[in-house]
Image (tube, rainbow, N blue to C red; front, side):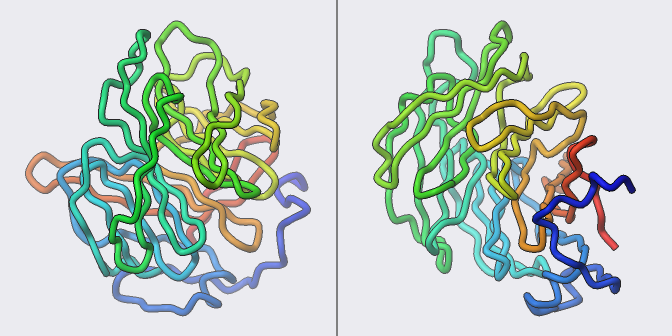
Length: 270
């Protein structure tokens, strides 16, 4: 591992490791000291769109189902939700989910973009906010310094991505431009962690965009975090993956990762 693999924010990790699954309950302090994988209990009709955590529970958006598990992946709550619930973020004991009820990636902007808010404990819906400025369809959301940042779809002939900034009451503030080059269908997932923005994109190959706090591009990497990326304590990240089987439905999991300046991140599970 190169010296650049350890960022200044990286805390000293214990050398012991643990694999987390639904049969191995662990406490939060153990999780913070280790690399791990979490498999979300159950299968769902549509694929994983994003994940977030408060390091006490995991939250999973499966397009039409919102799911809460413990940190071992054991199901605690699930509710049906409107199609299309995308990526989500956790703030102040609430979940904020990017939702598009219209068309994605339409050059004419026939999207219908919202942010839905849920109680993180019960998954009870608390509020809905219009975010119609997200012209090509809201698909992802992150939080930083009291503001929310929404990302989403993109037509195939656009060579930059857009990030839409809202205050705590979802009053529109600013449209930011990321000079990323074209990414297939825009940006799917977003999180601000370790003084960087992390954006997951579809494509072949799938792409990770890393920017500074002001959306200056720092890296474009051939990595797949298009189904979810989240920050963790101790300088770590969580990266989601998922699969769909015709007869069984769709599943999801997350795996810890170490930020790396040269490659984006390095997956580490044990």
